[in-house]
Image (tube, rainbow, N blue to C red):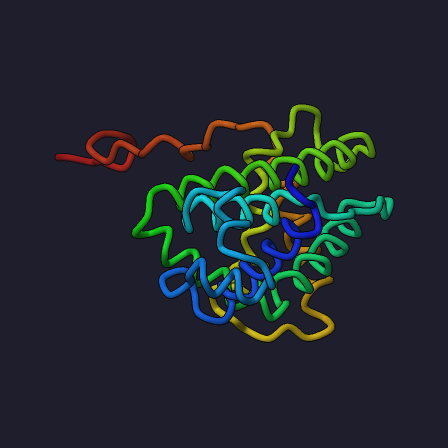
Length: 211
C-alpha cells in the first residue's frame, strides 16, 4: 500500500522543482532528492516525468476555491479576484504558470491536461457565481456560466500572469464593478442590430425641378 505522506512529499517536491528549474530541466532524481524518497517510490506511483507532472498539476488546478456569498455579484467577484490574486502572485505559481504555458505550446499532452483541469475549475466557479446572481435577480434566467467565464477570469489573469502589472488597493473593486457590468450586458437577450433609416433616393423627389 502506498503511503500518503510519501505521496504528499513527492507532490510538494514536484511543485518546488518546477518553480526552481522548469519542466524541461526537472528530473526524477531531483524530485526524489528534494522529497527525501527513492526514485523507486516515485515510479511506483507514476511511470514517467510527464505523467508525474501532469498528475500533480491537475490535482492543484482542480482544487476548489472557497467563495463565500457576499450578497451581491459585485461583492462575489471582488472576493474571487482577491483569492485569485493571492494565488497567482504566490512565488510558486508565478514561476510555474508561465513555464507550463510555454511547455504546453510544445507538448499536446500538457496542453490538453491544463485545458481540461482549468476548464473544470472555472466551470465550477462560474456556475456558483452565475447561479447566485440569477437567484438575486442581478442576471437574467438562462445566463450561461460557460459563456461568461472568460469575462470573469480573463482581466485578472491577464493583469497578473501575462502583463505582470502590479495591483493597488483600488484595482480589485474597480475590476469587479467593470466585470459585473460586462456580465449584465453579455447576459442580455440578443437583439437584432438596428440598421438605421432607409437611404434616401436622391434620383427623384420634390427637390428636382427641371424645365
